[in-house]
Length: 171
Length: 452
Image (cartoon, rainbow over all chains, first blue to last red; front, side):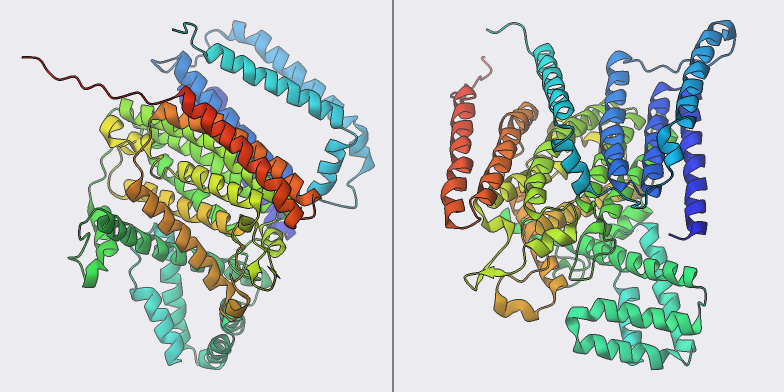
């Protein structure tokens, strides 16, 4: 991709992602917020793809847009059947201040840890894209234990969900 | 000159049923290029040899025609390489959109005709010879119908839902290998791209259901989303078996892995292996559910939910949903052809003179016909049965297929593979089918009549 095209794509993605993220926290209707969040997830996937990490980008799309965003919608509809829009006001700014402070602190920690990270100083690797074969080999050789623990955890979560959903009376 | 002009004219006059505006713009672009070619004296010298070459070499024809068109554009119109690349992309997109638009119009007619045949009726036979112009009439009807938006609807979400629905359906067409060298975008993670974009349609269905502010719409959307999430798993599991065997997520590499013939005449397609045939059947069933086709079309079950998430849509928005659903069916059938039926490869060595893209579309159309056939013969299933089937049969069967594929691979993919892999597929199938059918045995139907 030429530099101009990459720049245009980057600008559009930035605008879309930031706009959608802002909309997700400021819109009045909570379902609109959820949909904006889904759009922000799409934008992040676009960044991954733009950076050459196609695998991560499409997994982001599959998991975050296809599953997490839809799950958020389900939760919204199941917990708020009326779905009445909540007013977004600044009259409780004093209450909002601790939240803002925490958000700022988290953001600062992330920024500092990224700025001081080793991998940032190492520069870009010669091989731009990581092949899926390499990823898979790493996953089942050096990272086998975390993979299996994640699998056990997810299975436990699945069984737990089934137990919750099961009917109690069995007659 | 004559040949090229008539080719362009046929594009312009074959009215392609219900097409989105993008296709109309693309076709207008082709017509304009044709008109420009008529006025430009350089055109015959470049376009005619390309067309002649394409006629002589049909297996390379699409690439040769595109090359000729690009040569012409380079000499007559566009000098910047950036815009030339853009034009090259545009030509591919326009060809794909018009091709699938025409296929959509054709399929909507074929479906009605075949269903009518199954149900002992005539089907559409008033518009044109044998009802051939029915898709055009349908398209015009859809275009001129009033677009009704319910007063309580969320207008933005209601409007955006068909758009969000149709975009991924069209985008996934980009990674399918239509023939040797005829893959619009050769993506190394193409299969993943397909499923990732397929997952985003769930958001569109939710938008349609919630934005309509109608309980039938919302219930239908919830059902549709639950169904799509459930059937995505067997779809991905069966595709995973193929990815394991081909050792790649690239559709082109998967098709190439299925080239060649064993014993001189049996094609090496994945569907002709013990695990592959089981995977293909599972994949096709899950694909029908994913495309909301009968017998899994209960999100639109009209007897209980009016039309599900489509209840409050009319006119062109409804047509857009309809288009997205059919393009989605074509795409997933195309993926089934790529994964299991050898993509562009000919079924017999003697038939290899027929170009690969013709084989691809023949196989695609055969699968679409099978889907129509199933729609005409199988009744719609109940929503709880649908979930039981997905989670208790399809997903375990998907895992078994992965196991069988591994056994097939490590036993040398020959007669020993057949002996080992066949029981691995068949035994769990029998156990699952027996076990589940006993648990949900049908009892005799009790009829209750009104007394009095």
